[in-house]
Image (cartoon, rainbow, N blue to C red; front, side):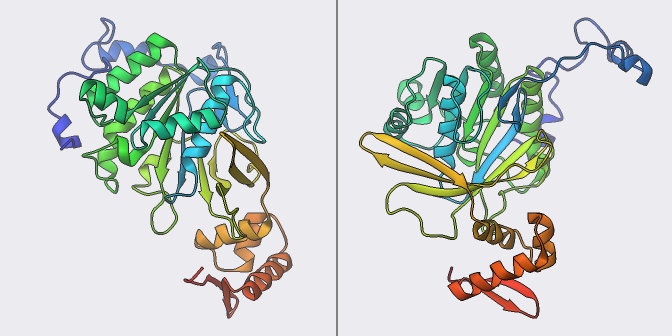
Length: 336
């Protein structure tokens, strides 16, 4: 297994950060890189390029997570195609066309092909690497904990000009790393930070656990710029297709909390019809309850509404049968 202690004896960093750097010792490099506070104001810096809306920028690490079957791959593919084609995704503006590399570790190749066509993909600036096709052609299996594969992906992005990298999904593409061990995440974090230094945006697709929170150690969230959570709406979903509510649980780039949206991906012939709308506050209420909030005061603060309004929503939810109210505390019923 790959663990931190296993790497401690390594003398070679695949990214070239050990020993001397560019002929410089570390003390020479640190001295050259040091800058006083007053000197910092004279340095010419560049603003990170916006990619999607006000929440995704050049060099970001972001996560899209949800429980199984909610629709995280649909949204990830939609974003990848939109960024590669330079066209807006739902309510979010795509600022410019970017070359995108999409690594899939789970789906059959035929399903990716159908979804790409259905979402009007077929754009030259989007490249897929399917785990299934890769194995059929080369016998290789991707494991992002492998330093050799990490270096190869970085070199491919640099060589072919890929500016956005989708990794779908963390559980399928990363093996021999214990999800709940923060130390094991270091096997990926240094690589992800190196991708950031090369201004490559990384989007991880990941699973939610039984508590509806992102699975694994919280350390992976520390260096993320944004985290997008998807949930099933409290209202009835369409008889065909996929329906979910998107909500940011972290948004470092945006000045205020992004809007919560309800999405539908419905087959229409050989195409997928995508629609969206601002989410109903009942859906937002349910998500806060799933996050562990129990009182009208807490939920009102998160939603930016009055306590009385939350109480009205809760009474409506109780009448619909999916919420119980006891001594001012709210709780979702297990059967819903």
